[in-house]
Image 1 (spheres, helix red, strand yellow):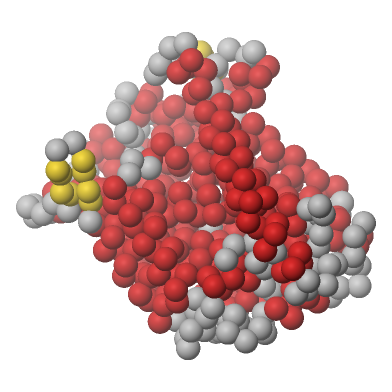
Image 2 (tube, helix red, strand yellow; image 1 turned 90 degrees about the vertical axis):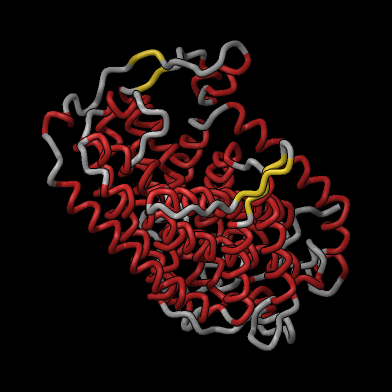
Length: 499
């Protein structure tokens, strides 16, 4: 059994021209930049900063955002280098694994990306329905999208938003990108408006102390429940659970990392981008820059408007909570509308990214090959519809909010492998043309990988347990189906150079 068999870069690029399994190239760097902002700037920009300030870092959440932004920005450079060499669907699955490390790693990272995007898409779709109903309430409309039968609750709002964007993506990625882009521009305008107004309520004393002194964390449970809530690092080292201080800044960075998700999804569209070796790195970089600026501005406003101690007394603190606490109740309606628009754009990009990862794995035979057929619009129609149905049903009928941390750990694991793969590929294939190169190889990529691992260790024990279970299920599928049906194993492709 050879689980480390590889494909060459040339084989990978040649597969993009396979009849009936090729994607249409019509995206520009601006489409990719807007797509990155669309998926990263959702409801989180109005809530995650307030929660991290209240329960983790205080005003120093600004530093938490910068740490997460730097780690993500550094990983962006790794993605950009791979995208400039291998502009193929699949993102980290293709970049780091099948062409660099081997098939078993390819499966693991592909499985992690499916976890990330399916859970993120389901969670976001679910909350789109929640915030849509909240917006209806704020404007005085007596509309509710929930249907309750006994103890079972079914929300048809997620089905509406998923079905809408699934239809757009079936008709063509460019059409979906244009609609998504228009909504994203509107979303950015709302964010900037709220930030500008918020600055008029900022008080300097709310930033003091900037780094609150560390204090013991108050667990919501006891015994085993309290242990499950602890960051893995604190549990493993026997540290007393704490909030604020330097440890709070780091745990805050692990939490707000969710805010920067997006560019890895954008990388899955490499195969649909015009002149991808130039436009993918440029689009990813511009998108990440915009995301960092927007989140940092919102963090400054949120922590400057009200004290982090007052935020911590609220059940579910958000930017809207801060406005309400200073008497600007009118802002809640604008923020609610911004969230509805923001979440809608996130759903589209996650639908696109999830489909492209499954598409790449299917084309390689690790999943059924029938899933990778493309239609007249150059899109995998059947797969896109199937993904939409699964995501909509999970969001409409399940309580998926508890799985939000799974999105973070799946993404961080992908970032780690991408970073480690840079020096490996530089050594194995120095002949490949790289339009963009990350500086400081091999030390910078290694430091980036270590930073991602450190953030992973600051996620909860329960998140790690769920992650291990997910990987175990994935290995069962790989050894039960993927290994035997992979094109490298069936002889359809020549096995790459083994080392």
